[in-house]
Image (cartoon, rainbow, N blue to C red; front, top):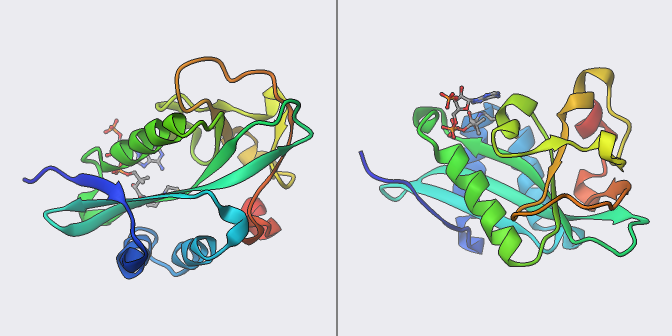
Length: 181
Ligand SMILES: CC(C)(COP(=O)(O)OP(=O)(O)OC[C@H]1O[C@@H](n2cnc3c(N)ncnc32)[C@H](O)[C@@H]1OP(=O)(O)O)[C@@H](O)C(=O)NCCC(=O)NCCS
C-alpha cells in the first residue's frame, strides 16, 4: 500500500477534483458546488487540497473565505466545504490528513477561525466545537436537527477568541437550501 500525498490542487486538476466528489457523494451536487466555488471571486482566498495515492486522486478538501459580520477587530475566517474521499480509499486516514493539513496551512497564512457544517462526531475529533453558543451564527437559520452541526475552531493553537456575529459566505454558498436540507 502506498502513502497518500496531499498537495494544493492546480487549475488543471479540476476534472480530478470533481471526479473525487462524484464518487464520494454518488451524485453531482457537491461536484457542482466545488466547480462553482472555484470560479467564485467572493470565495477567495481559497485552499483546495488534493490527496493522491500512487498518482490516483483519492480525496479533496476545499476551504473558502467567509467573513464574520460585525466582528471588531475583524477576523480572517474560512469555511470547510466540502470534504470527500473516494469509497475505495475511505477509512485509511486520508480525510484526517486533508483536514489537518488544511488547518496547518490556514494557521500559517493567518486564518483566525475555520467553520464547518458537518457531523459533530467526525469533526469533533479535529477540535471543532459548536459555534452558535459562542455567538457565531450560521449564514442561514439552521433546522433543529443541524443545530449541533455548525462548528468552529481556531486552525492553530490558542483560544477561539471573543469575536461574535453572523457568518457571511461566498456567493455560491448563499443558497438557503444548502443549509436547510
Ligand atoms: C467523511 C469522509 C470524508 C471521511 O474520510 P476518510 O478518509 O474515510 O476518514 P478517515 O479515514 O480520516 O477517518 C475515518 C474515521 O471517520 C469515521 N467517519 C467517517 N465518516 C463519518 C461520519 N459521517 N460521521 C462520523 N464518523 C465518520 C469512520 O468511522 C472512521 O472512524 P475510526 O477512525 O474510529 O475508525 C469520507 O467517508 C467521505 O468522503 N464520505 C462521503 C462524503 C461525505 O460525507 N463528506 C463529508 C461531508 S462534507
